[in-house]
Length: 242
Image (cartoon, one colour):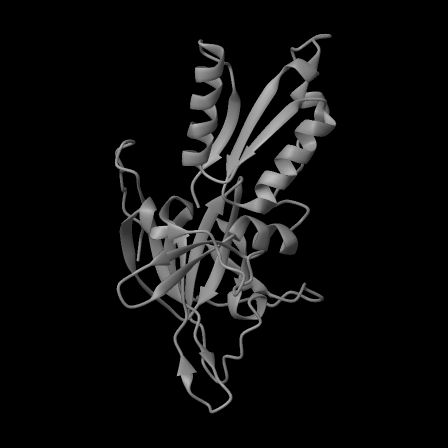
């Protein structure tokens, strides 16, 4: 299933997710369907699992490597990462993700379809789920889709390359001797892993940093700043959806 080009108008307040399943087996041996999602912007393509090469002494959750045309990419067994008992079920679909200049494959049991949904149907994860791995809950008519924090998942398994901390010398490039404590940067990202990494590096470089969990919250902060100052306020930021 090759991803097709999908466009969203900026004022629709919608996002698109690819829904997939990682099923598990309960104590009675019954298969329990579990629904997950990922922002379609991170999905390069969806393929059947080709020949897999195992990796010696790989981290738990790393299934192996596959060759995808001219590239060799790491394949993550998402069932192991999520600590699921899958019994004899075999995951034979690979969702190929690309973000942060990294390409990685994720093993799943099945892929349903792409959904365009309103942000009003997305809620922050409740305490009953592992919020470290989930960025949001999508309410469908008959089920709930958990949107996973792949930046965190991949970052922990591939820490050397998934997300390099910002280099202070890069942050200061071209700034001379300006007082960074007078500059405010707004960082908006639904992934706590990404947000904490960016904010930590920026604060270490001497900047004032404000945080927002999503674009809507970031926009409210900007509007408040403009309203309180009576003029445009220069705020830099990284804003992404889940």
